[in-house]
Image 1 (cartoon, rainbow, N blue to C red):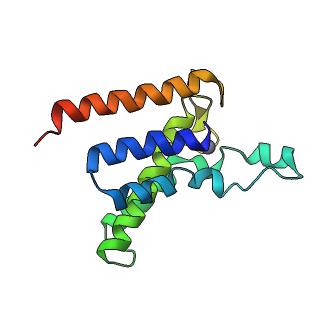
Image 2 (cartoon, helix red, strand yellow):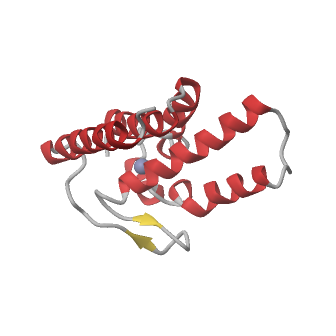
Length: 146
Ligand SMILES: [Zn+2]
């Protein structure tokens, strides 16, 4: 999925469910994190390609960080915890979103799963992202009105 769609889909879902701009900003930073740490393709495209959607896209890492934070083993502090939590949530959304347009690691880093609903950057990807936004809006309008 394109970064712009990772940002939109993740941002809308997190804002729709938290109503909190700071948490949304952290989640949106996390939403491109798994691709960011892989680095740019650059000159060595094939070595990048071989690593693409590897360890950086393994959900267990982010779930483990969330669990460690829950146990209070990392530096404490409300903002720090919220930042860490929502960066991990954003990264998990990224991996889930990638699983709709290819394969990502699941229980084991080398065991990849996913359904290919559309090609990255295709019109279908943008329609899919728009559908998620509309769906989130409907859910929000139905259940979140105070
Ligand atoms: Zn990715």
